Image (cartoon, rainbow, N blue to C red; front, top):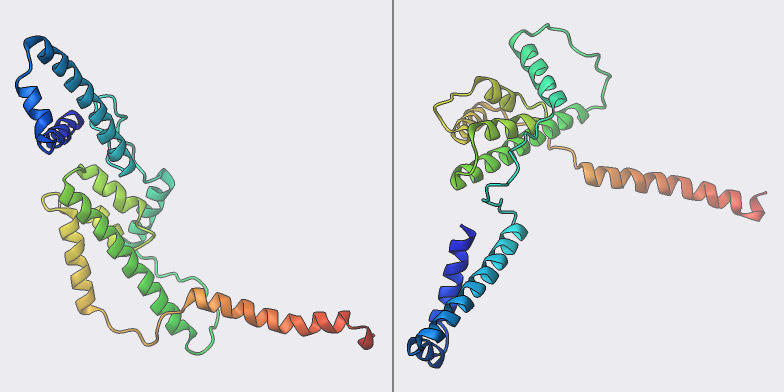
Length: 223
């Protein structure tokens, strides 16, 4: 494919070349024609190298026969956790982890934060599946591997991985699951936490609280 693209690049360059150069090539003698063929082959090889470099920079996989076999990204421990979570979903034990009392309103904000994280996770995976479905460069096992690797304990992605329809695109199935969930999803009772701003606020508050103490300890008049 790279050779074909290189030839197209070179041909385009020749079509846009100055008229004098193409006229000279058209009236060349047989000896000159051999030299031009050799020159053209060298230019195609150089253009092919440029195309390969551009494709590599863009992250396009090479299409040569020596390319390594595809390797899964979902680690065995990640898949084991997915299988365990699915088993618990299918056969819930009813046991709940001990929950500590949270300040008023904090539990609602934590719930909203968790939901936002899960929605962002689903949207990211959907975008990835749709991108490769459009390109047509993934096999079924690669789609499933991506869902496994990126599931992050998301029940929707876990169910899709285990209960998907092999006759329909996984991107379509995930989009339908997301749409059905959004229709039945009740609004959150509080906004999600601003984790980045919250951490900065806590650090600022801690710094403001410690600063006077440090200054008092270093002030000779207080001793």
